[in-house]
Length: 192
Image 1 (tube, rainbow, N blue to C red):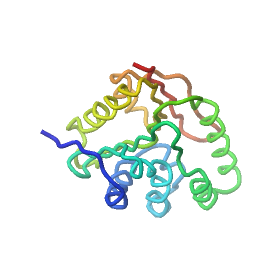
Image 2 (image 1 turned 60 degrees about the horizontal axis):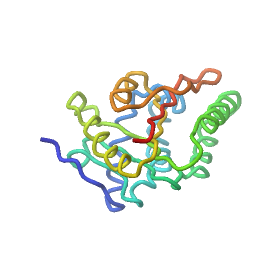
Image 3 (image 1 turned 90 degrees about the vertical axis):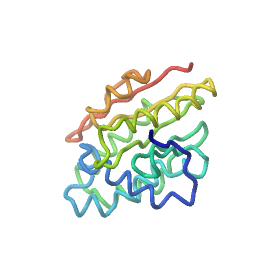
């Protein structure tokens, strides 16, 4: 039986590497990082800026100590937007940067207002796909979300993952796409 536990700040750098592997074939992450060297050059920093604050707030769940990771941000905690923007501006230029700015604008418009839980990053080391680790991470985190009586929100950057989120009560509330970017699904789970 997989072990699901909360990860702390001491685990952060090591476990971020799980998400780098998890997003290696993600359509949106690879759109930003055009080519292997580009992706591997920015992915750890970007994913850390996006979901890393979860480690400081006791809301990063790991399966089997690094085979899979879910970084949830509790109400009032945001990604490090300034750091994310610096990474994006370093990676992209010209029309593609303009397209990314359009994507970020759409993300901001669809993001819920008011208290909610946000799941910016969940992923599994590809070596362990198909073992149900993502579902177990969702179940563990959603118990805490439900205990708070608040809604949960995420953007699915990979269409293959939408059904997983739907099985856990999320519903598509919009599509995020601008220019040549791959589409992402904005998904909301009502408070329970």
